[in-house]
Amino acid sequence: MAEVDWSEPFHSEYRFMRVSRSSGAETARLAGFLDGGSIERNADTQVKEKGSVVHSGPLDLGADLVRVYLDATGMYTGWSASVPLGTFLPSTTSRDVEGAVSTCKVELTGRLGELAQDQFERPVSVPSGADPVAKAAEIARGAGLDVIADASTYRLSTAWTFGLDNEGGDSKLDAVNDLLEIAGFSSAATDPMGRVVMRRYENPADRAPACSFAEGRDARFLRTMTDELDASGVANVVVVVYSDQESTTVGTAVDADPASPFSTVSLGRRIAARYEYGEAATQERADAKAAELLRTNQSVIRRVTFTHAYRPVSLGDVVTMDYATGGVRDRLAVRTQAITLGAGCLVKCEGRGHGR
Image (cartoon, rainbow, N blue to C red; front, side):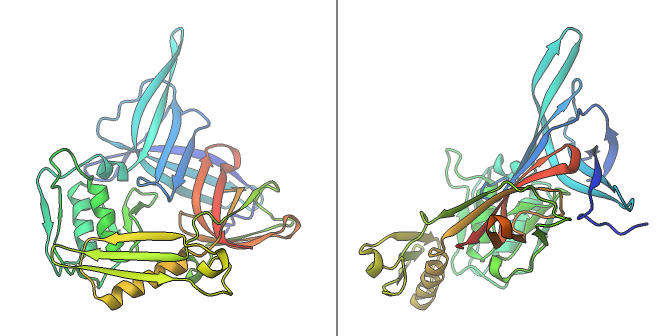
């Protein structure tokens, strides 16, 4: 069989599978889904994934899930690939009726929605010295989710407690993300099979590109795109506060370099950002964290929004764009994807870089 080559045009079909919540197994192929629909991914949201499709009639799957596949076949060499696009909680939101014929709009929610909609029934304590990533994984598994997590050497310096607010308080997903953040991890995400992914944060500049887009005969992106520069999030002062019941430590970093375009000297004013962490820290650690965050707060964000034929790229992956005619050449970290379930499986992608 020919090797899969996503730079080659391909025929696309979509397959919907019923997934047992209890076993995780695919139990049946679901018929009745109409052409069209979309899946959206957004790294800046808690749940990360959602979608919308139309079904030709009622859809009742009980507690089970829906998994969407792209089945692609190369137009020239005949290669084939079956790629999961996501595993979702389905809910029927509306029904359009024309005589005896009706269609139902089905909203799809990523599985992190289960953690976002759940709360602790009673206070849950995490002791000092505990591994926060292991505890985050335990919370997710306790809600019936599979977890893939990087190992962490970080340990809490003070005890944490969740579920103290009798009026509802934070969700289990809030707790998971708080624990991941203190350990230096990215917020929880899900892979296309619906597993919760907990990864150590890695600067996009240090990641190898997942794929490259280049203009030319085999270009797989549209010529029209949007290129933006955003300096609204730039700060020249960062204040970090670590506190627990016994101590408070404040770390500060200031950019006063006359050669820096956003420094307090160059702008003639302070632009401050503040971060708070619920645990104890040494002064050295607080100052180092402030200096680290100052560096990340001084990047002018470049947003490039473009549309391309499907490639196996996920949120957070780095891609390279080489569009010399349009003056767009950069390494971009994928922040959003809107996948159209139609011919060519077109993906509208926002990638973020740093300046021109």
